[in-house]
Length: 430
Image 1: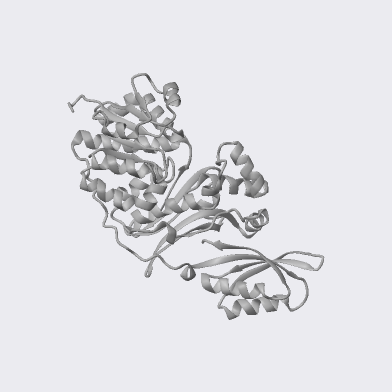
Image 2: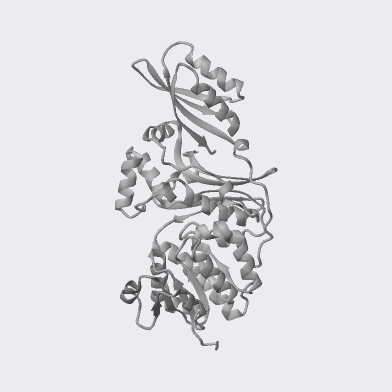
């Protein structure tokens, strides 16, 4: 390619992110060319919805349903995989890398399940493989972990990485509505899918923390090893109680380095109102990273939407294009991924919030306290929220305790005659 030649971009998948990426590259072409030193243009787009392509694309952009033909196209130097999922996306990515094409993806599931192998394949073929948009939407976090924080030993990554659940929890906290009502509102506004399972049950966040932990700790992680609990069982009562106790409830993705390996988990958690993450509202994301040299940093911004994710994709395209111009593709060598153990769920140490309904008469609290004590669970505080018709609602906050110990204590408490129900158990992340 000559010094003045166009750097050709091919987009596979023309959904919300694909269209955002295309719009940014088209509308900001002059600015991008000044930064790169050569024109960077979309030359080909592949999507099964060919009528959509005819409607949305400029006439000089090749449009088809054939992703493999796009990959083989000699005018395509950078392949953007924006369809999501593992198949056929993974096949297209491998085909492009094996052909020596540079690849940019926004595919969290593929990265979570096959990331280390794809990075190794890219290095073998001297190809760039970038994936900033796979976590955090428009927030830059992958590049800082790969480059800006490379001199640190990362100790901890904690984040709100799913905009849908954060919007729901923000609305529940502010307006006091039920999860079901707020979810319907989020779907009407386009913040939640018609099938919200991936978001509500925490699977989306689990993919993302797998990627972040793999990069931060240079480890091969199996996504299925990571504890995953969503917000589908969360009640408005618990959101309100948390506020009264000085906390907000957030769906957190947590990864920590421990002497025994990696602790990784996704679940709702009480976060102190004094912590910056507690104030992250709406569809925004925030990721909090602790490094041994830099200390604590936090990145914050829009975590969803075609233009936000498209911004991250285009950032990767610009970086790859600069590498093409300077002849420095493949400079980010594959990290030395290690097979580190993932801590067993029972060994996780947290504080806990527990709400239960009990018969309101003498001796009940003492019986509950006995079961907690016998299982080495220390109570930090207890509040009686209501007492009606002979039934009281109690809320406990524990000190730090192992997961297996709190679960054993709660199982024993369930068996007490005077305990009607353990309504909810939520971790506390200080």
